[in-house]
Every structure is written in structure tokens, then in C-alpha cells.
Image 1 (cartoon, rainbow, N blue to C red):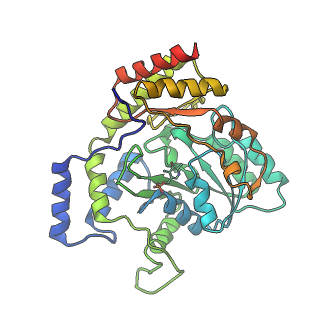
Image 2: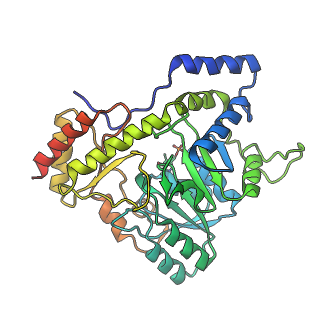
Image 3: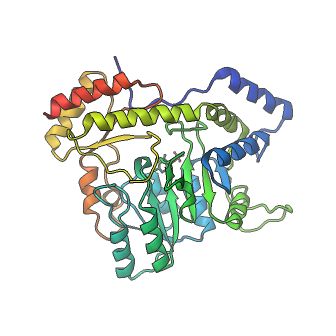
Length: 361
Ligand SMILES: *Cc1c(COP(=O)(O)O)cnc(C)c1O
């Protein structure tokens, strides 16, 4: 038996072909076409959000959000997928790192407040990740942002369909970004979206991702091309039909893992008032020897695992300012992600957990 770390959702080919035929019939392949409109509407309804703009990937989603919100300098988390930081650096945004909480692995509001108070530079914004789909302490981050008058962007690439305090996690901050890369919970092969708090920001972003061309055809501020095309929307529409079932199943696998491994390994503490989308299954082992033994024992049984996310991004980009990221470096040195995807069973989870329990004991 082999169990992969992740397996992209496979779209039903009959349904997909039905959409592709529609594209041929309309002759509309990209530039906010009919399928783009359908997917936007269905995602807004499903996620419980407004002002959702589809874009061509999650990296451009962060860059366009920063552009629209005039963020030219930012404090960000060191514990995330590399794109959270690399997207900022590529855009020439002055970037600094503030530490995470060793419990949630998300940006620590207390450390953030301290960093913003101490800093000689006045940063324009905060870029935080809901890492592994576990919501940040959104209320405390909002309080810190208000106190220091900062914009907030959430990289919500892991948090598709996650609710916090009874509403979509995407409704917090000035903007939240999603990735619809094939490896994510929901995908369009490559793709993404931005959810804006304010409709003016949404309108501006919609022009900017189409070269900056205005509604009347005149040229405004220079833009970029970050549109999602109709073929990608066809994949999204096809997969969206079953997404509720997929996420329920993934969440069940996630909770099963957490029960099986409780007291065996350390795990991040999840937000108290949230729903889970089963995007990732991270565990933490402080001891390097044990980490290696777990990875090896899993590999010997055909099971993939990955050290993820490592290195801590303040280490990877050590020329950038850091306000001290000890916790992030500690977590990055011991975190391992276990297989979690829609094509796994509860039995798979029990089997993997048994192997880990045997090694760690
Ligand atoms: C996947 C991911 C991205 C980048 O998304 P792409 O669509 O691959 O560009 C950004 N941030 C996080 C946290 C991610 O996991």
C-alpha cells in the first residue's frame, strides 16, 4: 500500500466536458466570461462572502491585494508557505518578520504589538496566514491593527470554507486571499481569489488585474494580467458540486488523526470557535531522532510525509528585518505533515497513526 501526502481532486469528465462545450458555443474563453460569472456567484454564496474576485493564482492574489491597499511595507509571519513572503519581496515591499505563537503556529498578536511599537519604520500593513487552515486570533489582530492604524491582509490559502465565530474567516481583515492550486482543498488547477472588505477595493482590483483598463476603456493606473480563464472556471464549477462532501470527509479524517495521536505527539492548538476543513495534518516532535524515525517508519510502509513548513522564512530571507522569531524557528525544526486528502479512508488514518504510536512509544 502507498499513501500519498496529497492528491488533487479529479474533476468528473462528463460534467467538465459539458462546461467546455459551453465555452466552444459562446466562443468566450477568458476576460470575465459566463463561467467566470457563475463561479464567482457560487463561491460567494457557498463561502458566505461578498466582493470576491477570481485571479490566476494565490501568489498574484497577495500581490494585487497589497497593490490595491497601498501596502509598500509589511510585517508578516515567518511560518507559512514561501509564497506569503516571496510575493511581497518580488513586489519590492519592505518586509519584516514578527514571531508566531508556539501553540497556534499563527502570528502572535502580543509579539506583533511589541514589534509595531518598537519599530523605527511605520509599516503599512500586516500580512498574516491562517496556517494549516487554523484561523488566526482575528479579534486580537484587529485590535493591534486598529491601535497602530494598519491594514490587514490574510493569506487564507489554507482556509477555504473555514468559519470562525459563526462566519467565514474570509470576512476578517481588509482583504483575504485564496489559492486554487491543484494541491489545495478546492482548486481550478491554478487559480485563486481575493475577498475584499470594501467594494471600492474590489472594483479597483478588477481593473488592475486586466492591465488597469477602466470600464470606459480608458487607461488608469498601470495594472497586470491576473485573470482566471474559462477553462479553469470549468474545473472549479465541476469540483464545487461535491465540495461539501469532500470537506466533510477531510474534516473527519483530520479529527480522527487528532484523536488517534492525542498525547502521542504535539499538535498545534486549533482556534476555539472554528470549523475545520481538513486541509493539513501537522504534528510536532521536538526530538530530531524521533522525527527521523517517524519519517523513516512511514516511508518503509509506503506512506509519504513532509517537513512542512521549513525553514522558518526569517531564516530563508535573513536579509529582511526580523523582530525575533524563536518560536517559528523551533516549530519549523520539528513539524511534519501527514497524508491528508479526499481519497484517503478512516482506515488509512488509523494505520498511519498506529505506526507513529509504535515509533514514538
Ligand atoms: C499555495 C499557497 C500560496 C500560493 O498559491 P499559488 O496559487 O500556488 O500561487 C500562498 N500562500 C500559501 C499559504 C499557500 O499555501
